[in-house]
Image (cartoon, rainbow, N blue to C red):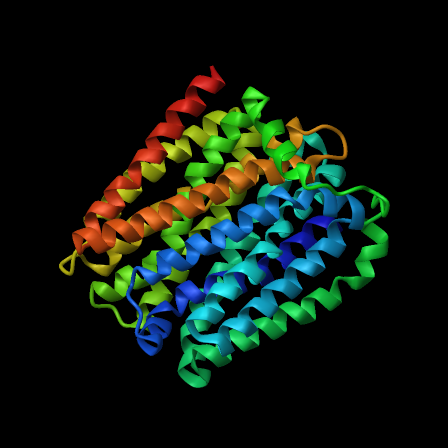
Length: 387
């Protein structure tokens, strides 16, 4: 189990850096391409559509090729997507979102397939949470290293460095492929109907349906948080390096919190009660984020943003372990892909809604306040489900 957890942690850390860099470097990219700040939400909306398609179709490919092989494919696609963005301008970013995130979306279902097979069931929320600390770890690296590297290499050079790292780590996973992909079925048939079957399988089971709705809200709010926090801080008067450092500092909070919530969900309270508490915590933190202003001290902004990171960035291990627990034997990757597809719908709707409100109101406050609605809604759903 330890080897599987470490491999998935490193795989997702590397991929996470590549996926979040456009948000961290957005002020530089926007300035050079003469784009509006709402471009960030539109870009991540395209990312969500591509990831939705990728996760719905991921299950069959994981069964056929194995979790490690598909993790390698995911890393290579992230690297290729960043390279395309560097040379293609606005059109390149659209293609990057489709290539670098559609195929790369298989990474989390592949991780669930592997951990669902190797993790001891009682400790699954804890094991999944440890592996899922890779996401904030990757965002932390992107936020802390991205802006200083961009000062030396430019945003294009920074993205190429990250692309090279993804390709190198994909090669480093090769020795584990034969050792861990022992249940791959090379002759497993893949059909277009798998997309519908994956969603229908989640909707047919009330417990999975509740998880899908939770994933919709949680992933949507996470997408808004990661896409807009740096740009929001620069609009308040922070320079890019300071905004990136603050972003990294608050993201770092999610690393111990993911492990802590996984431990609590494994040993102290039912996982759904834990997720409901996180949902209400998100709502309060988001409402306070919408009240930021130039007069707010950096410490107060950091505390509120840290609370948002501790909730909106820290739910993954519990939700994914519950998805794997409810999956039929050998189908953890497929079920996880179905649940995560609802999350990608949230990652599409929430940033696009945020961008629309930003354009129509001319400010960030209303957009942040509206984001509290899905958090409160799903918190109530999870509390009812737990009863």
